[in-house]
Length: 131
Figure 1 (spheres, rainbow, N blue to C red):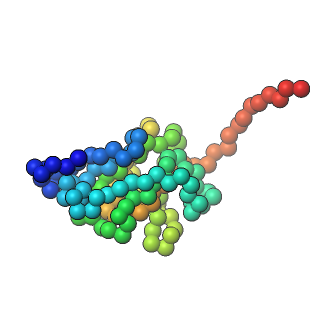
Figure 2: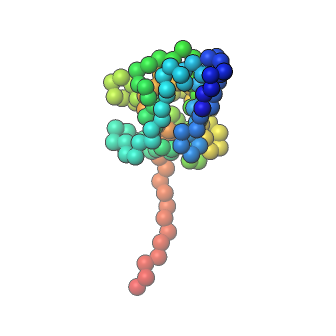
Figure 3: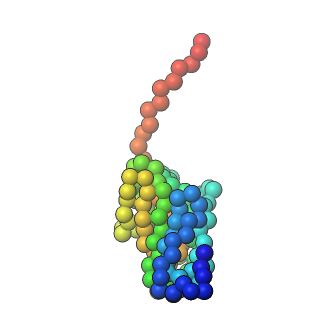
């Protein structure tokens, strides 16, 4: 990933899981070794939040970076909000987010858990039951 000749102010992009990428300076990669974990079940999300992408845990938590890190995450159609966990174990909305058709890009200055949501919509299902 990093070589001895990489300059500390150069930006490097690393893919953690299918489509989940992080862009940070070489200095951040060397000093903090950022990691992304995909959480299987997130019970701390309020019932009103409909996850539209994997809920992520970014580490190291509690560290503020000298320059923002860019996180790119694939999403489902209809995703329109991004939330991060705060120190009180509550969720707060991140307003500076760029949404594309099937992904979003968010800048973070410190790590936490990240959840991408959308507005709940009722689904209609049509089925047939054999007699």
